[in-house]
Image 1: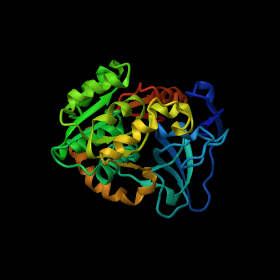
Image 2: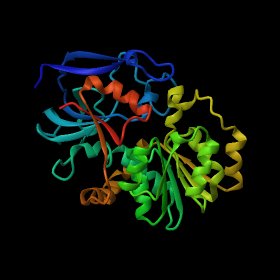
Image 3: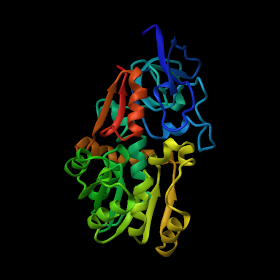
Image 4: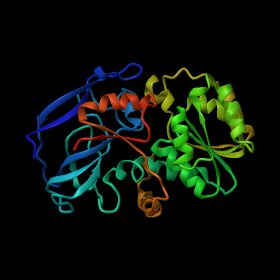
Length: 345
């Protein structure tokens, strides 16, 4: 065991995009677990867009990270010391371990993972919160039917790629939207999308809508929303009657603060609400942490597809805890390719 714990704390609340000064790397003694608790040495940690919302002191579905508090996030690692009956030293576990080399968690807040089935990083991406989000949102709120057309932005990210691959396997036409030609090639060649549109090649929603209309000649039945911005503006007029829009995020607005509440969005309320009304659209917002009871079902359905290779996985791994802030800033700018992780060991 190393003598010290390294962790990254929130140094200041950003106004707009976070900067390096928003974070602070601190070194403390390795903590000692109490009764029912477990000490974990973190091997990999996850970086996800929702973390930007935790940096704001704004009312949301979860409390903000306090100034000086360790940044929150999921991680996987090895149990070093256990005072919980269900875990033993050497077990590999997943939990909300934070941006840190070590973490103490109650045993009931950890989930044991089997590294012989899939790489441990799967618990942070394809078989973790992002993959679960894509599966639940598509199946519960998208209600996909063979022959329909689905559109998802951030198509090569861990949520979008799950949505696209599942929809394709169910017989839908799948159209991705991604940032850059490299990501669009990844979407079609690796994740199997029927088409992918580079949103960076379009300066506004009208131009993007024109390209999207060509790619969806029969209209759009399901739009899986995780981006907002000009993508949402481009999509809404193309939605078919009785279309469905699962909403799990709005990453293009997060840097405006308050999980997008501070955004100066161009789309007016009438332009948004009118197509919802006249096309009888179903719009469902959801936070996956409200649905952990369905995780076993998700794992039962999707884990075999990951093990067999039917579900493809792409990971973007940054090495070193000290590089987590720059990787996170890049994530919010769309610089990552695939699921963004930080390797600590």
